[in-house]
Length: 528
Image (cartoon, rainbow, N blue to C red; front, top):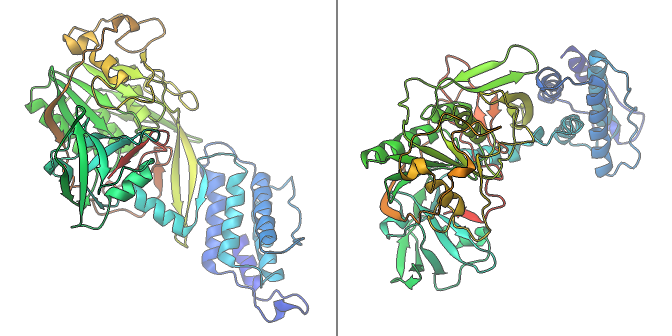
């Protein structure tokens, strides 16, 4: 910090002979100085790999020069970065270069933008897609997205086919206008306010969302037969992370969309509801789940495993081992877990723990493969640095970064599949066909060669054709209140694009919500 403060003090006296510099005094505030210091020292101290300070200096130089060129300075007079700088020398040189840029080009420079360009340049040389700079507005939008802002809609998840413009209901949230109108999974929306649905999730979402209290008229079909038109009154909805319903045969189907602040609590309610309906086996759907909170992932895994859930290793210090909560009732019933290429990070932690503990059979396609953790470090101007700070491993010691988790039963999902709909979802159908789910057959103790789960491909039977029963369990569509009492702290990321708050005692667990990764980015779904 000493180096940055020294340059800030000198800057007020620094002038160039003549020119506009004499009439436009340079300005580098204490907050700008602190932001530069946070950026440099945080990367040096917390990045999960060793960092050469000369590399950060080079990145900062590129960021400054690039910014000045974008501002119309053809040949910025900023000294070249030394390739042999030590930490102190690099720190000094970054401060010097920022100060010189402000002093030499005062009419071209907006100091906060220059500082952000410097920090972004330092992050860019890491070549890490997960380590980025959030400008204040972007960070506010990011946190708003993660906090799960309520929106006025009908309370359903829809699947959109861009080619046929078919809009199929995937899930209906309890207590929502959609539930009140008797929409059900498998229904097809053929018209919205008298017009055919749009060809993209965004267009469909725009048509169905609106101001609270306004109405929308839907024309739908069920099993191919037209139904009477429905008029729904939009209401403020917070989409639950966890929903569930009982399928024919006593199979509890549980959909978990993310590991947000309310996920564990919502899952408790869903599982309790399914147990009350005498569910004898379960399918946990983690497809398109981009991850979320560490604590919520552990809480979710605690329903299915005991012992280690995940091990996290930062660059320095001993690995931290996180174990399942023994106070959580264990689901001692046959279990299948659905995964796909958008099952990421915290969702992979849960899937990996279940697989390593032989607690369930993974069905679907290889997962995303995100085995690193990010934290966000707030900046004085309201922005933040998102930085990779650790790697994690499954209970069996597997590093999944870039490789993902291969399910025990690899089942591709065709483009025309309808997730969560028995008979139209091959991955779900394959899970329902497992002997332990169909008949309650005991799981053999002998594992397939190279496998770590209870099932092998020899268990695949014919699709059961199980149909959805008219019994659903979910958290209330109105109940997504964010818990309060957030601590002032950095934020730990357990998702490709999601965050979870990392709090220190005696703070209460943070409530920042995590959203999906590009979870379902490749899948045409929309929640309205």
